[in-house]
Length: 218
Image 1 (cartoon, rainbow, N blue to C red):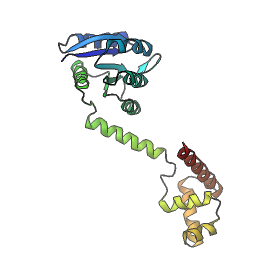
Image 2: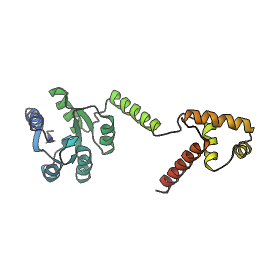
Image 3: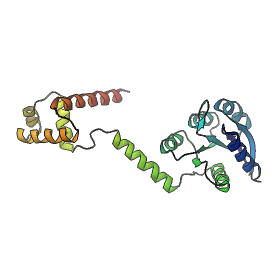
Image 4: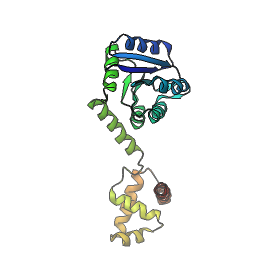
């Protein structure tokens, strides 16, 4: 079966180069080109391609949002994202938008043609290496988003109780520990969070609790 291909890239040389590659293959058919999101939204549905090769960066938007919009109109369309750099954040966004794969502009011609064929056949272009790189990036992002990642479970518990306005003595009673032990936990906690005063920890705990409550209500 011939795979119908539409190419979206604002760089004329790149777009025409990909178009020429597609046109030269017997099992691929070039059904259209566009240089912007607006043009793509106008012409891709009419062309009814099997695969859309989309540049991630476009002058009037981005390929990820374009991918999401096109697939809402054409559920069977396979989108292949094209970018000039290895961007894990863009990769994650593209996957969430339903893209079939992610290809760097630096790949050799036959690799791009092979990627188009793979997408057209309904298979994913995410290699095990690419998947692992994305998961590593996600884990790092999650760790950096948690300001309390350096604290132990006990220290986190002490911080939460301080955020409720409890004194060290009250925290000690709540946790069934000696007040001296709680003082040690507080000192360790402040050092890890690069804070000098207990009041700073209380403010942080309150902010985190309010943020958590806000997200839970959404």
